[in-house]
Image (cartoon, rainbow, N blue to C red; front, side):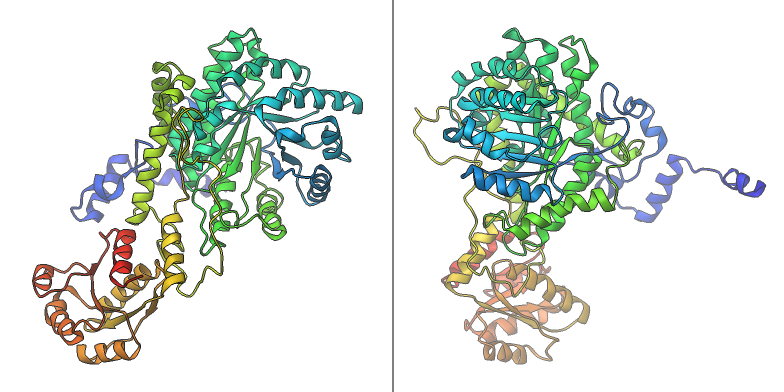
Length: 617
């Protein structure tokens, strides 16, 4: 035992400089900053390693769970969250039947999306028949104009049932500014309903009624720091309006709920929720609430639709699973996992069951609900939390300088910012700077759409007259949509055959053939790989026998000078000729008439569109 106790004292911990010196040796002269330091989309650098000394000036590691500023979560004894599923209500009785069914399958939070025309006592009674609302969380989203009416009906229903007001948990997701941000509609007259809504539900401390729905920004492509910064400004706008109208600050703050998205950046998303609670607590504190508990941020997280794909759609399960893990470890209040088939159809019973089970898996089998803020003390995540908070605060202050969130929305600066990010991300996806597995990288060569078509995006508005939509709107399509449209068009028009003429150096020809197959299959081309040919004539003859529309020569840079031009001349225009790579002799090849090259610096999407055009597709 004595030897075990002395074990770690026998080794001297290396210093940071010693680590850096060792890394520099391993890099063999390469630039440390360029090779190993990651510049995030959020505006700060991430180092390849962190040590205790990196946290010396941070205050977040000293925070405690369940205590102000709540960076480590709102709870002290567990990390439990509500497993939520949303139901679109067309027929209240059918919606109730579905709700009762899924409550027996692991759900303990319901989200009813209710058209304004259906808001009535009869609808509420039919919807909640058999549902015990002091055990199950119930949430409602309806037309903002009908929200006060719905609140009054719910209060009457809760009183009739005799529920303990402290135990009724849920929300009415009243968020008129969401329509201004996402669709450009002028709903400013509806903003005056906010105080009335809060007043109607003031006796139910755990039933929130003012929503901040930044999940729409997430599904429009917003970077993490943008969603976080605008969420703070959005929430502060509602808080300011309520208190200006005479609502008590504690009541106002406890009425606000955040609906946020979760993207694929695993550790960054964990840090986002920690930073969000930290900053929101600081904002509310400036209003001098009587209770620190008023500073708690309540978040419902929904996994992203933006990065989901129509092709290879089961990969969406991998995306949403890591997103759900981020949300759970980030200590959210409740969570919705988006079904994997959401991009192209109304979710089926199977996909909804899988989505539920994704949460149940990490809760019941992996026990993510047992440990409060398990990421606390991680040098990396603590750094991300602090860095995200700093960058998001800059966005918050910028919005405040513009007159607040509402003024910024009317001016269109927020919409312009999100739209610019969406355009940039689509451009990055086109160049494979942002990967979508199964879509712009490693597509399934044999998969067909089988009639699947992308559903219309619900978060953007089409062209409309200025009178009806006086403000700018956020326009968005999923990140994979451009590639999917191209692939479906190819499939429905003509599927060209791309033949790999592999020759020369074994390692290089195999690597370039694999690259080219992946490249061309992104547009749905039929690709034919080969083991290798002895001569270019043999390879061209084999390609023509296979009725190839495209012949891709795959070899080493040095050998292209020998093989490419003879192959091009022998093919003699009987198919499109492509060189895999960007060899040093490229200008000589171009001078000989070769004009098509595929390599890592290509814009994959634009190149494939160009090939389709040349092939008459």
